[in-house]
Length: 64
Image (cartoon, rainbow, N blue to C red; front, side, top):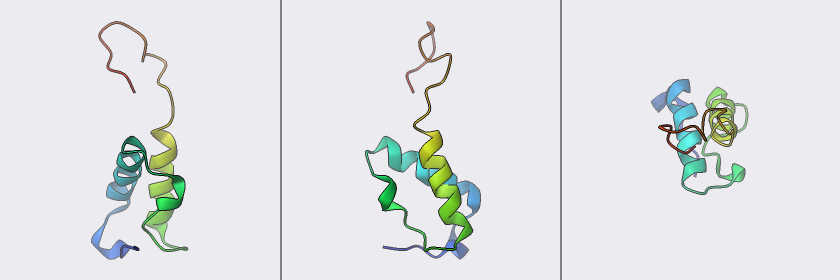
């Protein structure tokens, strides 16, 4: 399923990518078409969600 980027901002696409990773999706689940700027933002959000924050294991900080 592809989504038209005219209904989604680049910021929303980034957030959608992060949420997709949190739900267990694979990188192949990008809903935007090739050449769409939102496709790159979604992928960036997906990859950034995989990063481990340096403060993750400190008391009082939620897990990634």
